[in-house]
Image 1 (spheres, each protein chain N blue to C red):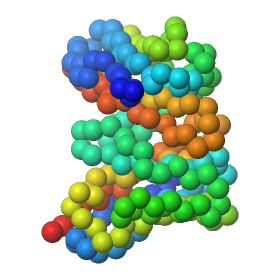
Image 2: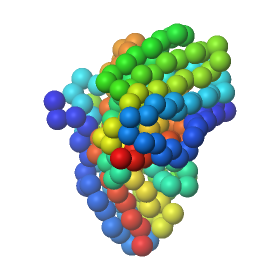
Image 3: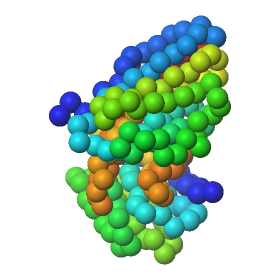
Image 4: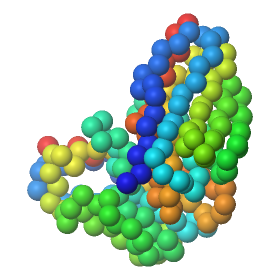
Length: 109
Length: 114
């Protein structure tokens, strides 16, 4: 059974600081996703990572994938309040997504 | 495109009643997924379809749950009879067959069973 672990579960950080969210998974996968969810809202796709060493960046967010270590990271640079949300990683196997527990990120002014 | 459309957005019902959730995927997408989100269990895949055919329903919690996709633009998830533990947010998502395509999620249906 595929297991996906995210850490930390909760993260409070000051504006302007950098931090990283980690996503570990237990078996080989076809691809890895990062999603953002605002309270009471749906999931918004951030990144799709397809292969080992893949790195994608959008604004202050950068995601990377190490398939050998079964690890993906989501790095936040110079955080701003608008980034406050819950971030999920999800691992795909045979079209099925298994989600991590999510990381609730709060940016403090 | 309007994105994935779900209805109703909110549903409050009493235990024992039948509940039907509806989903219209993005035009041209050949995969459709139903998920459930709760505080206790997080996001879980219930069932998914490819070209209107159910492929994997191993996530459907029990026989009270059923899903259909009569055509490429419409799917339903039915709970009969509903129970309080079914209270959750139900999301529909769709995707096109492609190496780099993501799954696009609908707004969700917030279900409360009293």
